[in-house]
Length: 217
Length: 217
DNA sequence: GCGTCCATCCGTGCTGACACCCATGTCGTC
DNA sequence: GACGACATGGGTGTCAGCACGGATGGACGC
Image 1 (cartoon, protein in one colour):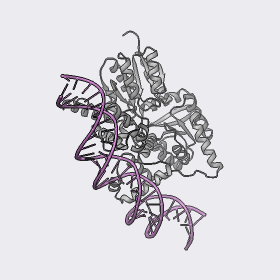
Image 2 (cartoon, chains in turn red, green, yellow, blue):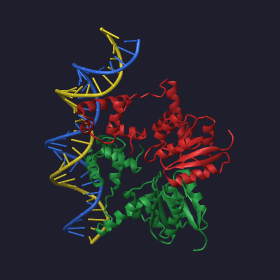
Image 3 (tube, rainbow over the protein chains, first blue to last red):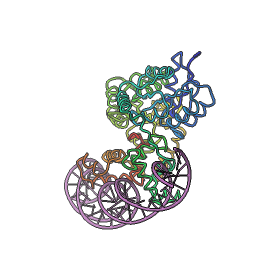
């Protein structure tokens, strides 16, 4: 490719954007051509301008980085996506990969690792943080070996609808009233969701939904 | 004072430290002379070296920025402390003031606001973020007018301990076993927390804890 | 047409969450 | 010493969450 890699930077914290920008701009082969303060803005910018690589924070208002990643990889197949996050967390890691990200970088890493991740992404290589993240890769590979693939949790549309409402804190009765169905049906759906996703109760369901970017914290 | 202000920078995210350092170093009157990756390290560094101003993140391993602030302002009265955080949160704001911080800066602010906060701190002026933080100040002033003082919505240490465990999805019985106390006491604490924070149930508690950064999603 | 998936609904029973009442002992403060 | 804040414990009662069993009807594929 001719010229430097054009990077879109999305993080709701100005100071973090500023720092990352300064780090990336120090490299001659990387150029930050756009910034965004939330997920929705990131999608806009990426669709509007010419961008090769999107570096997305996970926790952002309006639309999370995971939602944005799903949106971007679906609409702009040529675009590479790198997740940059503070969460050293297995669930997020998997969600990020499923959302189409080709790298997962912790905010606690050194500058050169971030730069390395950007370059790896452009070479279409997966990049995962050194150190603590090793555990993630191991568990990931184990799953592949076991043939689990990515355990495709197929919740139906209706179930996802109820999932969101449950995760937002509504009781069965409230949801029933909202959807004009019986509270019993809501409970039945909820039970199916819990079973499909391997979750214990609505509290775990909530955390799952927040991680998956289905609802805001 | 002769020479630039000597700044100690504490944040567990290398990339954030890097960014803030670059921003501060661009100012001739500010010099970052030390960095720390957690609260305990921050206290060590501040006590060892000559530091005029400590810029502390709130969410850090080993010792939080709030604990570090309390420690530092007690042991080193000449030292100014500035909290730098992602939490636009009334609770933390009050906690920071009580801990002796003379400023509260969000990571979402612009560079110049951070610099302004550092300078204000050195002039012994209180600094609070523009924008969203106005609401905090208003609410604070209202409380002062009502004569509430700093009316402690604050949860106690023990309560915060239980808060985290509840938000992580543990039942009363599990928490009781973990802490070697009765399940009844856990329920009592949980009820007090819900009442103090104005929350409905453990699900809202979880979302609160996630927003406040007390637990990961 | 038959099977499968999905959405809808019901009953029963257990357990935990939550609200309300209560008391005890230990602090530190005034 | 009295008082308040805190942590500890108990009792009782209501309600929602969740597991388990069942049933119906509609859509879609083969």
